[in-house]
Image (cartoon, rainbow, N blue to C red; front, side, top):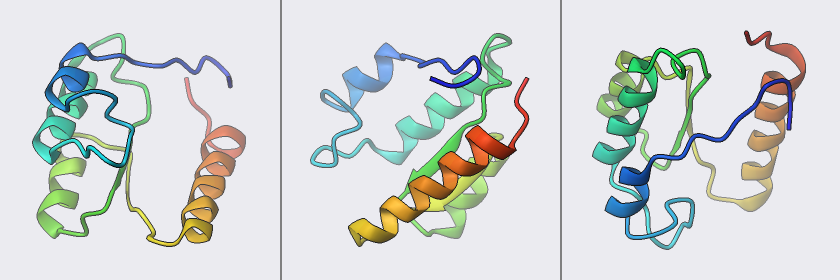
Length: 102
């Protein structure tokens, strides 16, 4: 892990999404993702953690809502595996090598 990185667990997310919410076979409803984002950004111990929203939705409403709730970045997931891996490598390079995080 990188400088002070930590994993945030939120029991409500897993329970409402029917298991491991990171599995593509059981996508988590966007309302739950936004609730999770809002709770992180309202928690004094967590609000400084950068949150990257990675979604299949390119809806202007979804993008605006994410930024209104203080997401640090909103990306639309590429369909092709190579494109997806390129995006993840770019995120890793930016957040772990360039960005300064408290």
